[in-house]
Amino acid sequence: MSKLKGAGARDSSKARRKSNTAPKAAGGRKLSNWAAAQWRAARNRASYAFKLIFTVFGALLAGTAVILLVFGQLDDVGGMLAGRAETELEQAGYTLDWLDVAGADRTGVEEIAMAVGAAPGLGLSRVDLNAARDAIQSLSWVKSAEVLRLWPDRIAVLIEERQPYALWQINQTYHVIDAGGAVIDAANPLEFAYLPRVVGEDANLEAASVIGLLELHPDIRDRITHAIRVGERRWSLRLQSGGDVLLPEDDPASALALLAAMHEERGVLDYEAQIFDLRNAGEMVMRPWPDRAAERAGRGA
Image (cartoon, rainbow, N blue to C red):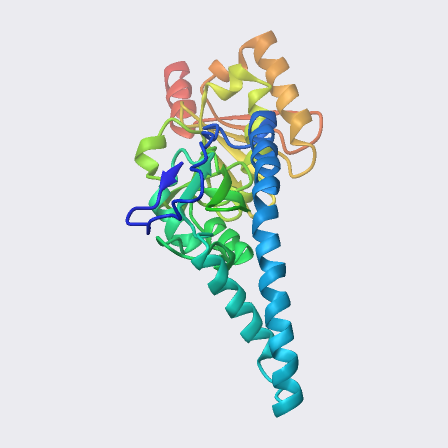
């Protein structure tokens, strides 16, 4: 919760209301309960604002009716009424004094305030909630956002942030991506060097599929340095030994299950093989390193 600095003095006749602190984590039951409680409290406070709006509009409509009869001017009447109502609300103290933010661990409150367009003394009714939501969702760490107007003096922002999932290498450059493949531009790849690494065109969009499969086979996963997307259709896995596991385009899950079974039975991943070819269903072909094969042949001669 942030108090907007430099806000004008509130009407002293209004009792200062104690604010609730938003939960830190975005999403989930805890955040939903907090939002519901904020909304219920806001409904009660909003009744005062709505009464004022109806009063102002009643007076303005009566005056406008006279203007229309005398001058016959129809243009900009709606805009005039809305502007006058907003001015009356601001003069009555319904201005943006507080910005409540929940779920922002990596997104700065200052960034959010700028996206909302928050400024001390800004009329609460002047905040465009849809535009504010879109602006917040354009921030690098933000996956989704909800913006609520809580009368009489605050805006609440509920954020779900993107979670770093993998490193994507493309054109010799690394990017941090989330599970959906979206690039988190504000994330420094050096700070997330421990994440799984995928390489190649389209690899970011398919990263979750191959990483999910590897999680099912820890013995294989722990020997992989990175996964390479080949032709935007299949994966090759680079081993710590420098060899490659070639997975098929169709049913890579069965291919990995076969490799896991073969390794458990015979320890095949410990062999000095350059290629473990699993592209044909139900079979595995191993190809030795050319230089090491020649070396063995020389020793046997």
